[in-house]
Amino acid sequence: MTFHLTTLGSCALYDEKGDRVNVPRQALLMLAYLYDCRQPIPRKDLAAFLWSSNLQAAGANLRSTLLRLATVTSKSPEPLIGGAMTDITLNFNALRCDLDSIENASGVAKLGALADAVAKTFLPAHGNGSGAVAVWVRDVRARFARELRAEFFKTMSQPSWSQNRGELKRAAMLLLDWDQTDDEVRVALGEKITSYSQLIGVTRDPNSDPPAQDMIAIADSGVPRIALLPPETLEDSERAGSVANAVIEDLTISLCVDRSVSVVAPYTAEQIRSSNDKAGLLKQHNVVYALDTKRTGDSLFAQLIFMPRDEIVWATRVQLDSAAITEHRNEIATAIQHSIIERVGAFHHIVSDFSCKPEAYFAYLKGVQCLSRLSLQNVRRARKHFKEALEHERGFAAALAGIARTLTMEWVLTARGDGDLLHQAEKMAADAIHDDSQFAGGFKEIGVARLYRGNIDGSLEALSNAEDLSPYYADVICSHADSLTHGANPKAALEKVATALDLNPLAPDYYYWTAAGASYFTGEYMETLAYLDRMRDAGPASRLAAASWAMLGDLAKAKMYRQRALRDNPNFDLEAWLAMIPIKEKWQIEHYREGLLKAGF
Image (tube, rainbow, N blue to C red; front, side, top):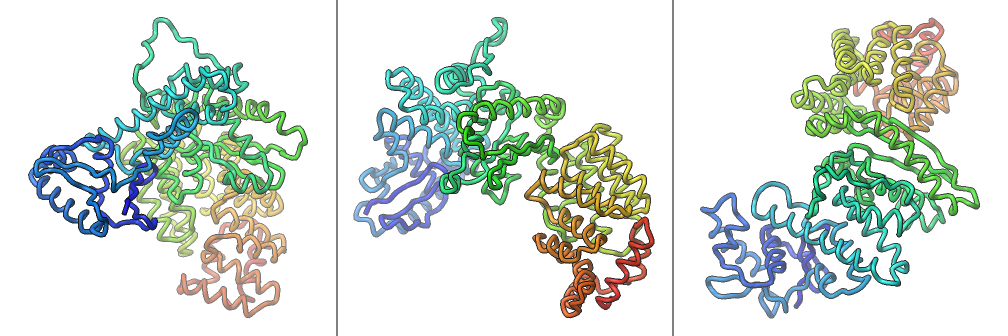
């Protein structure tokens, strides 16, 4: 029986049937280390390597690990581990490893194998910290990057290099992801492999520090990181016959050639796109900007999100239906690239803060992630993360605004008319504006707090200021729409919320709730319900759903939603709630009262 060890992208042991073998984590590390060393290791040294933080128990831990490994692999005619009492050695006849693809390859196949090794990451769960294992893992990753670089230039030097243009492009982007300062690779990518030579400005100042001899972590290069998230998987793109992914690839290359940003490698960007823990992966890869993209029919929508504030700072839509789109991909990518670089420059000072205090920003992102679902539990969890962000950075305007947002959301969800929540929210938003007068989020939150306190004109003024400061900030536009609805202008509100949804197609629930509220006041009850159906969790909007079904004459469904609303808030008082809602015109109050009364409230 031959076992198979994977080390790239994951670390696991499989038997001949392809079934995963349940072995201890340290046993997997031991197998990977022995495979990499390819020689017997003294027991004492191996134990100290694997348990460097607990040397007293290292020997006993090693004996236990070896016993468990031998037990779960006992069906193999040859043991995985052998050697004398003093040494540990790996039986290469009983084990195969995914790194064999590098050892056994040559030519362009070796270039591809090394690119896979760099893209997938050697032992991705390890490599952080100062322990012996972490240092070794980082050394192996750096070795693969150096070998990829050598193979890259070896392939480039061959007369037939242009036949391998695809593999060379991929290798170049991975190398620039690894080391943003590698101008030799940048020149090769821009001048030889692609047609982006006009973007290269890599002449070094003779008085500047000499180029590093070894690969450098990208976080040390001093430029912001951007991840370009593809609109769809490669398989879906090919199946649809779409060039959307190809346009993003061209944009990725053009940004790789530009020195003002560092670009996350496409493999990693695809992982971020499909992950349920985007904030965690963005933190892991030090991403400051994310270009989120979506293909709809024959158009490609792209929005640039400034992650430290979760703020959409730029957006565009590109038509893909032109017969000449393939010829103009480079021009489109270059135009988008220039727009992105312009926006990146505008946020330079905040990027510096982000580099100094990333813990604050990523705690903030966790809070934002919690608010994707409108429940009281999530709102309070988000507030905890925003407060944690403030512990790392006292004057963090976005975190102050985030706390304000949770307070106003709690006011809405509890429906108790707690004026203290709104008072605190307005104070927090004012503090955010005081700390950063150019931050649209502060004006947004003070606008929302003013709305619920009944100051509708003051709310609209603050939200107009917010929209002037950040015209692509979809959350601001959606809040502006909500205030327009309360200000007796639901038609204008629907236009605003449509713009917000266009800017943020993967919108949180409150966008649809806002659109539903505006639709109710225009008398479009089916539209109201259609928007509510698009919410991930429509529970908080059960009152509005009940009123809409009642106005349509379906009292059975109205009763169902009324019971759902009362289950979440059994002490709901209709007249107290109507008296508390900030609505400018009496006809709106009567319109809402009619629907709720018909629903049985």
